[in-house]
Length: 439
Image (cartoon, rainbow, N blue to C red; front, side, top):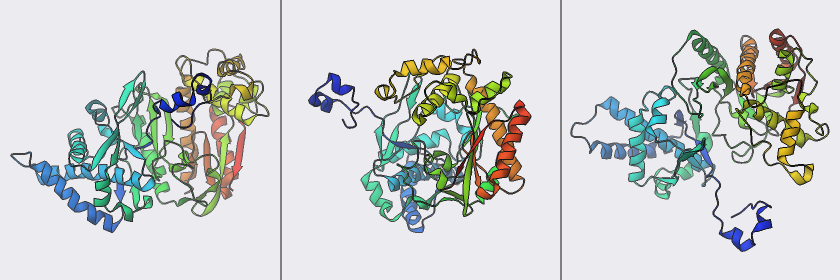
C-alpha cells in the first residue's frame, strides 16, 4: 500500500501496513455517449472489427434484425470502443465507468443518443467482453448512499487490433448533447421528467449559449496534463453546457456543467484564452452566504467567510471554511467536511473547526442541515443564465464556473457591471466581486 496516512503508523508496523489491501478506487473517466473519432487510419482499422462483431451478434438470431436495428447495435459497439480507446491514449491505467444496470439505464434514456437502447448497450458490452476486446477492471457497487459504476478497459489484444499506437487524445471529439436539461433523483442518478414551459425555455436558452460556444476557440496558453492539471471529474475537451437539477425537483440545483474549463485546477484557469484573447475571471465573493444575508435584510460583509475566527490571514483555513459552510447548507443533517484537515497545523480538530463555522453565523439561524443550499443553487444558476444571455446577445462568449465567470479581458468592466446589476435586481444589495487576471 502506497501513500500511507500518518495515523496508520501510530498503530501498525511497516510490515503490517504493506500487507493492507489498497482500498482506493480505480481512476476512471465517465462514459461519454456522444464521443467521435476523427482519425482516418484508426477508423479504417475499427470498421472490420465492428463488422466482425456484428456478424457474431447476428448468429444468435433465426430472423435477422433489419438494417436500421443492426446500425443501432453497431453504434453501441462503436461508442463503447471509442470511450475505451480514448482513455488509453491518456494513460494506460485509466478506465471508463460504464453502467450495465437496466434500471438506471432505463431512467437515462432521455440523455443518450437515439441509437443507444438499453438492450443493445448491455448486449454490446457483454459481446465485447466475450470476444476478448474488453475486460472489467473493477466491479460496480452501491451502498450507504455511495456507489461506483463498474470500471472497464481494453485488452492488450484490442489495443493492437485497433491501432491505438497511432492515435492521440486530440483525435477524439464530443458531439452536442440531445438533452441539456438534466434531472437527478435523491440518490444522484439521472431520472425521467415531463417537459414544462419552464424546461423548454431553459433548453432554448442553453442551446443559444451552446451555439455561441461551439464557434468559439477556447484554449490554454500552457500545456496541461489530463491527470494532473484537471480534477477527477474531467473526461475530455468539450464546450457545450447542460444544467443539472437535483432531488427530482426543478427548484433545486440548476447549475451549468459540461465545459472543460470547469475541471481545470485553479492555477490553470488564468491561462485560458477566448478566440486568442487573454481572459479574466470575475467571482462573487462568498455567494451563498451573501444571498442569505441579503434575504435576511442584513448588510453583506465584504467577505462573509471572514466571520469565522482565525481565517483572516490563512487562505487554507478560508478554503476549509468555505467548503464546510457550503456542505452544511447542502446537507440534510451533518457533513464530513472539512476533509483533509490538518489538526496539528491548525491547532484544532476537524469537528471543532466545523463547530466554529456553525457558531460564526448566529445572525442566520436555521440555515444548516436543512438542504437549502440546493435551492440557493437554483437562484445562483438563474442569475448565471441572465449574465451569460446578456453577453450572448452581443456575441460575447462567457465561460461559467458556477459562481464565477471567465470572459475576454477587454470586457471585464462590463462583466462586473452586469454581475452587480443582476444580483442587485434580485436581492437589493451589491455583493463584492473579485477579479483574477490572466497569466
